[in-house]
Amino acid sequence: MVKPPTPLVVGLLMACFFLHGVFEPAIAAEAKLSITSASAVLMDYHTGRVLYEKNAHEQLPPASVTKIMTLVLALEALRDGKVSLETGIPTSELAASMGGTQIWLETGEVRPFEELLYAIAVGSANDASVAVAEHLAGSEPAFVALMNAKAKALGMKNTHFANPSGLPFPDQRHVSSAYDLAVLSRYALDLPMFRKLVATWGPVVMRPEGKRQPELWSFNKMLKQYPGMDGIKTGMTNEAGFCLAATAERDGLRLIAVTLNAPTSQERNQDIARLLDYGFSQLRAITVAKEGEEVGTIPVSKGQIQQVGVAPVRDVVLTVGRTEEAEVKTEITVPKRINAPIAKGQAVAELVVKMNDKEMTRVDLVATQDVARGSLLQIMLQTVRQITGGPAVNKQPPQQ
Image (cartoon, rainbow, N blue to C red; front, side, top):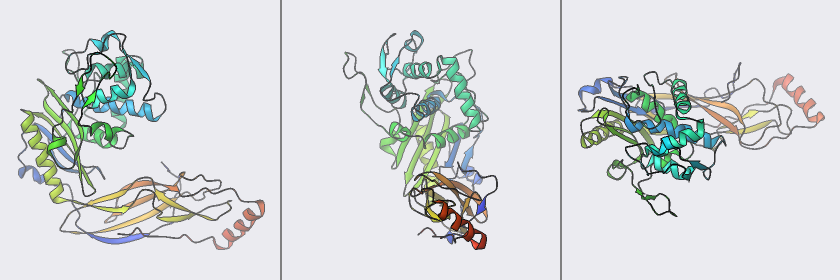
């Protein structure tokens, strides 16, 4: 993330246009939606705004929805090069002893990391969760400490994890909230491979070369029942009831819905459908800028060229309602000086997006090409130009 101590706004009012419909959180909607689950939340993935809530911050057991955090830490380790998809993960006696949903790992058995990721995401395997946790952190308690540290970093104030599986144990305090799990889901959706894992319906065959070959299918039947749904994780214990963290996308609009402690799986799924239906009926997505597409140029010092194009690292999407008007503005902010050399893909600026003068999001902008360091003569000439009134910034408003 580019966070210059003294930013220079070089793209002020780079784009200024009107959109019909701003949707503010409609907490009054609680009276309009019939939600059976004890706790529920509907969140806009693009901005993190809460669109609906019911006891969203109440601490409740999350059951296997816990495994979202287990996957988050596993995929961060994969992203950071601490483990590969081919890494062999050994099974300890503790991992093999886990009850509930499992792939029947045996003590001493070694399985590829990728296989265990699918076992966790699709099959909700408790034994695989513990095996991965022990491998990544050295022990289950050490992994749990990482889980709670990550929860704190994400602002999950009503969460305390006690194990990587979500299984209930009498001597453990294992709680979260619908809101916290929505925050976690929003973060997880941006991790490499996460969406692929949680969108998998099945079948996923474990131990393709072995004698025991359990065939895994997702417990999230809404993947096949609700148009646009592509995740995330179910959970159920007697104490937790039926739980689900879900996400769906339609026409570029992605929503996250979480329900905890529903009496039955049918009522849980109905609650999720009602939440998502409500969100999709109220909102639409507007793409302000697209990943990789140039949105402007910024000045470069000491380079062979004096400007470089910049593009966002991800799609920039705002969600708006269908009845009101909104003014959207974008700005490019950069440090006072960007010096060559610059590598293509290097973060050099930020795109700040405001709606009705309220900042909605910031997105890193990266250079669209390499910029080599200039010769001594080029640098001297640039210095003279900057003293006498430096190069202009080319501002290109995103196309609608």
